[in-house]
Every structure is written in C-alpha cells, then in structure tokens.
Length: 266
Image 1 (spheres, rainbow, N blue to C red):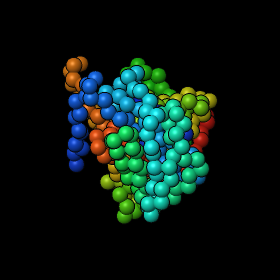
Image 2 (spheres, one colour; image 1 turned 90 degrees about the vertical axis):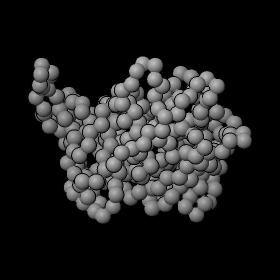
Image 3 (cartoon, rainbow, N blue to C red; image 1 turned 120 degrees about the vertical axis):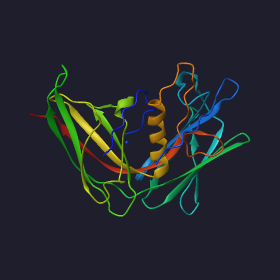
Image 4 (tube, rainbow, N blue to C red; image 1 turned 45 degrees about the vertical axis):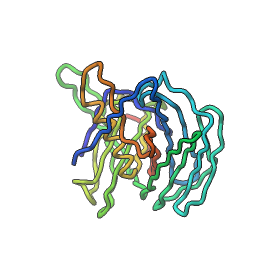
C-alpha cells in the first residue's frame, strides 16, 4: 500500500528500487516541447496537446504549438493522422483502443521528431467504493474517508492510477495524486483509502481507477519525487521522466479502468 502526497498542482487529466530523475536545466534560450496524450480503452476521442515551455512547470510561459503533424499507430503500425484543431490540440475522433496492444505516437515539428510508445493493460475493475467516518485528531475536525475495493490480477506487474471528482469538480491538486502497484499485493483483494482528504455528508464522489503501464507509473512517481525532494528557491526543478524521445517533456499513456460513484451518508 502506498500513499503519495505532493505539493504542486498537476496538469489536469480528463474524465491515478530507486527512480532516476533526469535534471534538465532549462532557460529562455532552451525551450522544450511539452506533449500530453491520454489514450482510453474503448471508443473515445483521442486528443494530444502540444505546447512549448522553458520548463514542464512554467504553465504561464507555455506557447501552443500549431504546426505539428501527429500520427498515432496501433500495434500493427496502422497510421491515423490526427486533425489539427489550431489551438495546440490534435484529435483522432472516435478512435478504438483495446487492451493488450502497444500504441505509438509520432510528433513532427519542423525538423524535430518526437515519439513515445505505451501499452494498454488489462482493465482493472473497481468493485465498490465505501465511506467510513474518521474522528479528528490533533485539533482537526473529523470527516469521511472513501475506500476503494478491487482485485489485483495475480502473476502480473500491475500499476494503477486513480482520479476523483467531488460534487462534479475534478480533484487535481498535488495531494490528489494516487498511485499503487502490485509489488507486495500480487493477486490480493485490495482495500485501500482514496488519497488523504476527508469528505462531508452529502458529498458526491466519483472515482475512476485505471491500469497504466510501467512508463506512465514512472512518470507519475518521478513527478511526486521531484516535488518532495526539496531544494533551494533558486534551484530549478527537474522534469518528470518522460517516455518521449528527443528530450520531449510530458507523456503518452494508455489507461484502462472503471468508475464508481458514492454519496456520503451516515
């Protein structure tokens, strides 16, 4: 069981040994391309966002990239060219993705080429979610914790990412990053709380639990590790480990999961 609490604001997602953190020193003369792409199992619009920034974290300095050509390949390398929406977003409408396949995207921007590959793992089934009142400690008020229940597939290195919405609002602050793996729970039935926050009576909580591959787990792990690593105010943060070639930042990931909703009641 693992809990990760970080202190930065994450890039929103649509609706969760030692790691080597690559420290890339960036400056105004060394902009980097930041590519974000999330491929969901089933039939969905697949959207890739491309921006340019001096750092992964410098959201206010990011400029959209409208001159890219983005191509998505399935496991048999059948190409689909994404439509350019002229706002830094590129889309393949109603794309069908399925478990057990590798997917690759290639991004061409002028003479620069970036590519990344991800694997679509088997779906993790979120059996149920439940709430339980937790009394306050050290002068803090009590509240309701939310627990997830799911079965880990035996004999497979599984990696998980959870997203949540509270009363329809995605919970995407740093402390809402939830990751887990099956290193010590292979084949077990898992009961685990969602994040570290508590909820109130009447809150509606939606949870999406997804399987991810090891490269995306590594991306989120290093993101959390960088935020918790400290450092002086003058030290530029490292960038999370990307699965893009050619020094591209961001990630291309495949997600396969299920959703549940709970209304907090006594």
